[in-house]
Image (tube, rainbow, N blue to C red):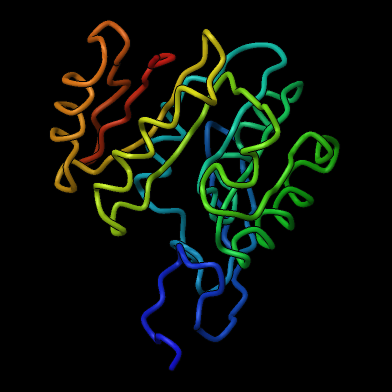
Amino acid sequence: MTNKKQHYYTQFPDVNVKINTISESLRRHLYIFKTTTGVFSFNKIDLGTKVLIENMIIPKGANFLLDLGCGYGPIGIVLGYESSKSIVYLIDINKRAIWCARENIKINLPNNRKNAITLSGNYFEPIKNKNLKFDGIYMNPPLRQGRKQFLQLIHEIPKYLTNNGSFQFVIKKKMGAQYIMNFLNDSFSNEKIDILCKRSGYWVFKCFNIN
């Protein structure tokens, strides 16, 4: 029997397809995003993602960047627009999300879409054998899956970062931002962890190459 309560972090969401279009000004630029049911926050860009986008640090020059769990692609597309010389990877397990991300790259990055690469799969699975390292990994983690999985993922991150790379992510305060902060402090050097902002109930973290 098909599980009617499948979430956006499944490969094939079991909800009827309904295409939607939204527009949003992010970092002083207007973006248009095609979305669909079965994808996270398809009616509007969720506040956590907006807080991350507005406050994330984008390294200058040509870099390798990753939007992990990209959804329909707002984080990765903003990275691609703001850092046009970079190669940006967008990864999501949700097939509908990847379809939307590809469409949104065409809409928002018409002159740079070859530098935005979409891959379907669960977190790092699509690049396990590609020997890729990133100067920046960005994420709005799906904590509805459970905090434990995210904490396990944190330990994988250093393998995919360059020496000067960073992992930047957003956590809702009431979903355990302070717990995550304590976990990072207990697991890694304090000097390698910054909180970029606390806004509207969200915390944006930046973890430097956490070896």
